[in-house]
Structures are given as structure tokens and as C-alpha cells.
Length: 494
Image 1 (cartoon, helix red, strand yellow):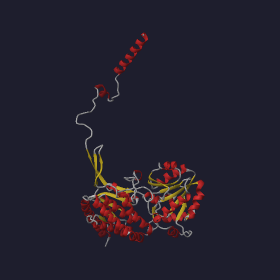
Image 2 (cartoon, one colour):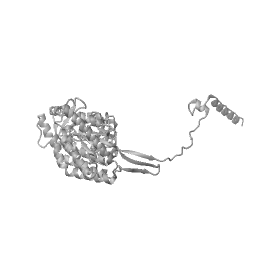
Image 3 (cartoon, helix red, strand yellow):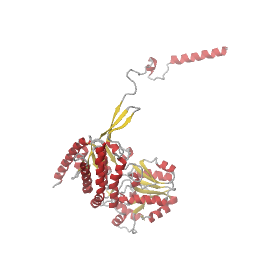
Image 4 (tube, one colour):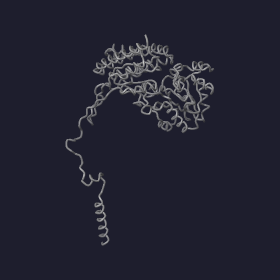
């Protein structure tokens, strides 16, 4: 089959999926809370039963990450997510304000398009399927070609589980012949009401350019600042746990470590003790050359790989048991390649004089590809936390692994695999996306103020002519002056 035939079939398949899912969604829109909850419970059950097989399939197909961590992500995107969203009111009357006499009624958005990344393919498909159904929406996925099999399987399992529990057929779809044309077709087709895009900057930008509502999330370039009051062993342990989780494939993972001069040696020793290897400048350059292609885009061969695989590819020798590679950097930008996002087991390492310099460096790093996303700080000083809360991000993660903290696993944030970066990062939301972002709210508003008669205040002719209610004419001023003079004269006579 030539490319032309493939593209035609791809576009036609996409149109069919959109039509079928939209038809199903119009039926799902009539379901009540009990029916929806029954469907989601079965989806969660099936996701749990297949968490391991989906994780294995994802690693085999993409080569990214670790099976055990992808199992955790699949369970987190289903069971943990369900516990969080279960009490959410997304159907019917969701608020009745007796004082202001406003009734709020939830309505579904319609058909969603879900763009799925290769780094978290099955967990993101599960998560988006569940939040779509919770808000009575249908969804059609556009998978990354490098993760087609596992994304397709996750989508099929979710659709079959939903239908088995009473959902209309074809409520969850997935393109099986992915192409640029099919993705563009799905973005712009009339059936799709909203796009949820999780992926690279180019894909997110395309989603926002499609001419319809979109929730897109850009990259993270998370700085992790270890402040002088921090519990150093605990801080290093959190960073190592986060950066090695699924070999760093989650965009909330740390990308740079920042330490103060007064604790530099102690932090470096702790990293070495826990499995970190500090590369020489020459080794750092060799690794950086392997990490990036075409500028500072991550090479697919290096995404989500172990430290051993990266070191072997770069031709450098590292101690057995090394978990993370660290390279010292003296600045931010093109001359310092590790200052960019690295979705793998490599960290940049910076030394600063004090917290003010750490502040400036964090801002530079965030503006280098992660503005709006997340920042990590390890400290026992609450005032320092609040100083860093002023930085241009929407998640300030304190004394926790930023991977787990950002997605809501180790913090009280909403469990999510779509982390909004706000307007600073070119996103329509700064939240962790939940079903509440996928509903329209209709409002019934009773009159509570009487405007049945004209109550507009009237102005005098002089004020109207002056153009300002505070303007006073010259005659008025002279009259006041004369009255004051007369009053003073009378007092003098007395």
C-alpha cells in the first residue's frame, strides 16, 4: 500500500470514528449519575486487570521507561483517579444558590479528541477515557505512531469495559492508522467539540490552532532547589525517586538540581551515595550529543532510558548501580544543553551563592522551556517557600518528588496526567485537568433586584454640559467666595 492510499484510509477511518463516537455521546448525555458511575467502576476494574499487560506492551513497543512504574501509572490513572473524582457532581443540578437564586446545571461538552504521548501512552488513554465518561463525553484518541499498539489496546479495553456496563457502542475510539492528515482531520472535524492535547510543543500548538476549544499542556523544565535548611538525605532521596520513576518520562520530573555553595560538597556526596554519577565536562558533552537531535529536541532513542543505556551509548564508563547521570552546568541556553528538558535519567547540576541567585536561575531555566509548569523546592523554611511561590509556575512542590507531586500522587493536587501551564505556558488552564474542565455549566438565574421602573439617575443641565459630575462653573465659584467674604466681615463686626 502506498502512502497516498494509507493517508486516504486514515482520514476516512478518522471520520467514521468521529461520527460513531458523536452518535454515542448524544445517547450518553442522557445518562444519570448512577449509570455513569456503574460504567466507570467497570472501566477501573478492567484497567486494573490489564495494568501489567498494558505496561509490558508499552515498554516493548516504545522502549521507554520501566514496566513496574508503568503498572503504577495505569493503576493511578484508574483506581486512584476514581476515588478522587467519585464525589464530583458532573450531572444535573450541581449547585443551588438559595441566596442569589442561581441554579447551576452541568452539561457535557460533547465529543473530545484526545492526543496521546508516547511517553505515557496507556496511562494517559485510561485517564482521559475515565474523565471523559465521568462528564458524559465521548472521546476519540490520536495516538503517537511510536506507541500505536499499546494506545490502541488501552482504548479498546476502556471502550469494551464501558459498553459492557451499559455505555453506547463506540463511545471511546482510537485511530488505528495514525498520520498527520488523520490528526488534522480529527482536530478540525465538526463532531469534535474540544481537544485535550498531551504531547510535544508542536502538537499542543496545533491543537490551539484548530479553531475550537482546547486544553493543551506544554513541556516542563522543572528546577529542583535544595535550600540550605533542607534535610539533604531526604531531598536527594526524593529527587532520585522522582527522576528514576519510569526513567524520567513524566514532564513533572526534575530537570535541574540547584544547590548553595555552603552545602555543595555534602549534596554531591549524598547523590553519589544514592546512585548518582557526576560526569566530567567531556563526558557531559558526549551525553548531551546523544540526548538531543535537531537542536534541543530529545532523541527518541534516549527518552526514558536507564543511566547504563545512556552511558553505553555515549561511550562513557560509569560505576555499577548508577541510577542517574549528573552534569554540571554554568549557565542556561544553547551553550549549556543540559539546561533543556530531558525526559530521561539525566540531571543538570548548578551551584549558586544564595537563595537570590537560585531565584534568578530558576526563572532562567523555566523560561528555557518550562514556564508555567512546575518548580520543586526542598526546605524547612516556610518563608522561603513563599518566596519561590512567586516564580512563574503553577505548581510549587515542597519536600516531595516532583514527578509524584505534580500528578497528585504524593500531594493533595488533583490526580491527573494533563498538567496545565496557564497562559504563561500557552495553556488554557493552570490546573491539573479533571472532569470539571470537561463540562459546560448552564445557569438558571431568578431576578433579585427590581429594575421594572427607570431608576437611572438624572443629572443637572450644568453637569451634563460640563461632561463631568464634579465640574463647577466660574459663577458658582464666585458665589461661594462672596459668601465666605460676607461671613468674615460679620465676624469682624462682632
